[in-house]
Length: 68
Length: 210
View (cartoon, each protein chain N blue to C red):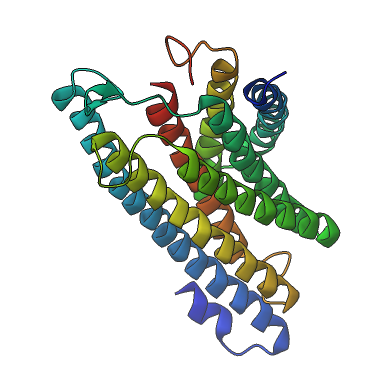
């Protein structure tokens, strides 16, 4: 197993964990309505989206044509 | 007005309430100011990001660009994915650090705060490794290198300042600056750290996945 594959496996597992905890955090914030709470919701959601991008990168879906 | 009403003619008991009102009013203003600061930072990053998109789409017919007759390689996506998870993980640990503080769990707060700082430093180390191994020319060699080092460098400075910010907040918690009810600095630190994470989502997509 080469280094790039190891990095992708670790990144994939890490992304799943972070995604799950981000969603749990988002759920906890959901009923709150302060300015800081609403900003946190947006930022946690975008962070979860970042995890999705990492998973897509790990499977070679992005970038098109495969990464380095 | 509420402040003056609360402060008239009452002894010690009302001082707490008076302070609470003052705190709440200034907290709202400070929070708005901090969010506006983050918005101004979004504008700063946006200007560089749109310059990069313009250069990429309008000037270069192929990407990565051709320099001295051969096309530059793509950046290392696998390592970037790994490093991104390190930074996103730090965002989650920071969120839970704040939650632990709100629930008066100082041990949990310390654990998550230090995890956040270490993960932030780990990300910076990864960025340094990336800079040392990226084969896209230097900062002033071509458009790709210039855009990459400028934007990720600016982001890296934000991460470094964020780590310093978090460390200062941790010291403040040790000095008793914050209580379970009054912890605006920790809220601001958490928002800043989430912001830094989200900027990286955009940069990760633009430089490694697009």
